Length: 120
Image (tube, rainbow, N blue to C red; front, top):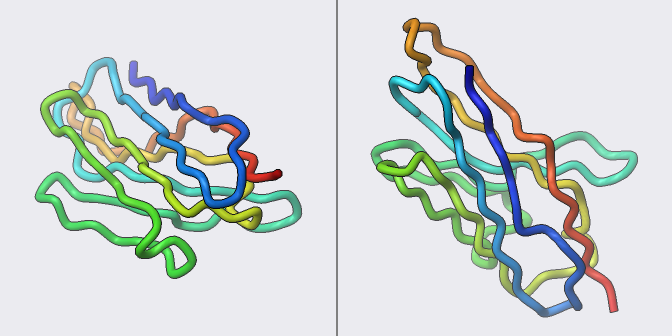
């Protein structure tokens, strides 16, 4: 069984910073990609940032230059360092991991989500 768990959300003022963390655990053979998506009320879930095991990263247009995705392959973790936060960054942030489990099957797994609110 595989679990993906996020932590680190909360309330932050505009212009502030926040760091989210995510860990994949369980019967994992290989993690190929990990990353973050977000969903604001009334909007579709959108890409924030993803990274491969080789270190290739991709960012959504609205966060490029402000957010940084940091991955630790040895621990199967991925952090999202967010800076210069704006009210429009308010959303539930979800961790996503694409991995091969111990039975050899490849699947995508989602965490339960963590709320980030940017407000004065």
